[in-house]
Length: 217
Image (cartoon, rainbow, N blue to C red; front, side, top):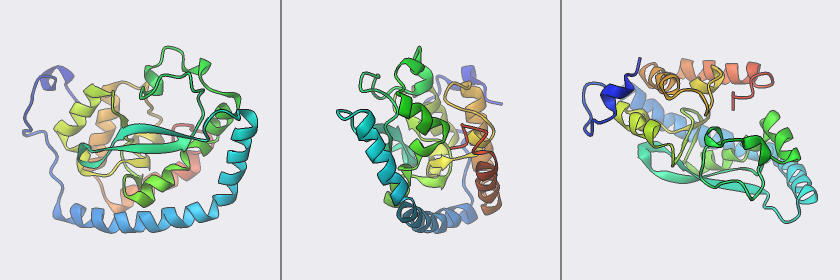
């Protein structure tokens, strides 16, 4: 388990940093290529759905943008703009994690609620996968303002892997309002046990639980 008090004021990386094996590093390169191919195919297949959602967005709120961009922290702690279907009104605070909002429900639109409940709002992230900023499976990319867990991810070496659309934390029901301790423990479990079989397990759990576990994506 993570001891936040012990790690909070350290500024160097020590014995707690998880070192990736050569096998894992090789798998990372191969998986990146596979991810981009699969994401590209998925974008083509889902293009009619994207068109329908885009039309629905403009009908429900003509003055609002179709997509939502937000700064997230990716591999090697480099920032990128994640892309999702807009689910919140333009009055919502920018670059703030949903779990950090006092009452996020007041900002979510009616169509946005449906998109979130069905996880359709997450699908544009396939473009992030094609671009190489994300993988299909990996730790959830953090909002830039989530400073404490960002530090712990750097401390433990989580940033060695590319963040994913779905991951070990999501299939276990953890989300942005889950404690930092539980989320970082999931991140650690993933990078310590990261293999092709674990990724397949996460993918299957996402498919099986996706419609009942709204945190899977």
